[in-house]
Length: 210
Image (cartoon, rainbow, N blue to C red; front, side):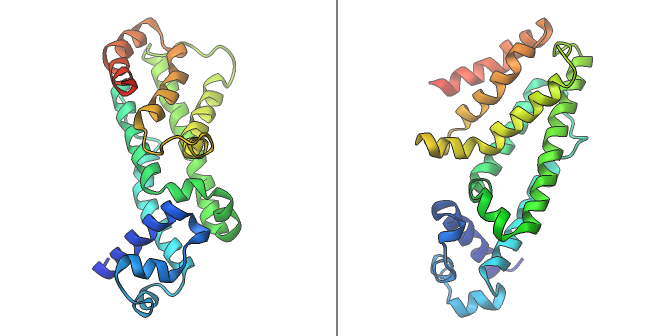
């Protein structure tokens, strides 16, 4: 990607995150990028073209995270994975906050997002089932218990920014993001899993609380 295109996309992300997708005009993006509207239009003829380009950029970043075969041998590996999700949420917050706008104006992007959702839930579910076999998590209490838990965790990840906006909290709290997710896992840990969590994960969560 050439430097002008990169500047345009960086400017667009910043403005979309600050003001919302629907509230940003091409002139504002051009001003932020330090170029003329004509130069911007040469590279991206419309705001829709910019959004499509950002969607492709996001896809390149989110696809590796959503790999079903992603290896998380230890709890700390999953914790590190949550950090990657957090920075994705922070860097592309408009993508998660402007949910209805994208659904209405960009149906193809919304269709891809639904695929991401299913991949995320399946990834988390498989990770939990793997850790049952390793003795880190307890057996399911009932059928689809962990699948439903995976769905709950997906909701926390995806709508974390939305709930922070509603309650008026800061949008840059990796600690609160992780604490909310790990709280879903704590009751599911076996004795072995609890020892690993107590030694490695809980000290980090307590650090975030200070």
